[in-house]
Amino acid sequence: MHILGYLMAVVIGLVMGLIGGGGSILSVPVFAYIFSMDAVSATTLSLFVVGFTSAVGSVGFIRQGQVNFTTAFRFGVPSILGILFSRRVVVPHLPDYILNRYGLVVSKDMFILVIFAALMLFSAIRMIQKKERIRPQVQNVSSDTLLISQGLLVGIITGFIGAGGGFLIVPALVMLVGMRMKQAVATSLFIIAINSLIGFVSSLDSVAVDWVFLLSFTALSVVGILLGVRMARKIEGRKLKPIFGWFVLVMGIWIIIKELFLNSLL
Image (cartoon, rainbow, N blue to C red; front, top):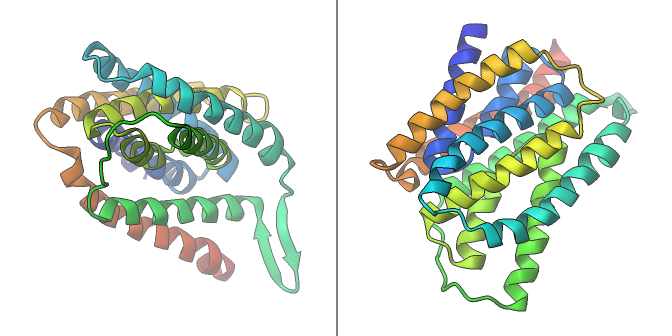
């Protein structure tokens, strides 16, 4: 099983390089189910893997001039505030049991993983659907407000469930700012890198980290994203999204069934 987990590290990077997101959708289940980590540890380590891998992947896009730093700043600052709110206020103060009455038991781990699975289902539907509409790039108060509010939302989600938010960031940049897909993917990776690494650092005092394991896993993920960025020059990531979307949909449904029904039978 651990060999499968390390192979998945390469797949995580590959997916991120091809479609600008999806790393956390794979890494959190890998840490939680293959390496048997609790939900808080799984989401925290996911933030490091996704953040570091995104940083490496964004270097090539920066050299190509594809990263829009102005938009990244406008989106990223609210995201950072959302991350700090989740990691420093929400997650540490969650009780071990969210619900323990009338025969219903919902633990912190179950709650986090079910919320994560719900995001997987949302992301899967977005990936399976037809391509997003691209609107002209026009700066106005409305689009700025939406971009900032979505940045805050992505930050809260990133901090709470360890998701980089690529499948929320890319559509936002395409529909609200009018970016072309390749520039949106590049800018998304840059934002994810900053958000995820800040989220990870903010959790170091509450999670024990096996650095040898984490750096080994991350190194394999970096290999994957370098391959993915290279493949993205020949394969359009948009064409791969529906296939990956169906895979994510099945995984999300499986996590919900496992956490809500199968665990109670074991």
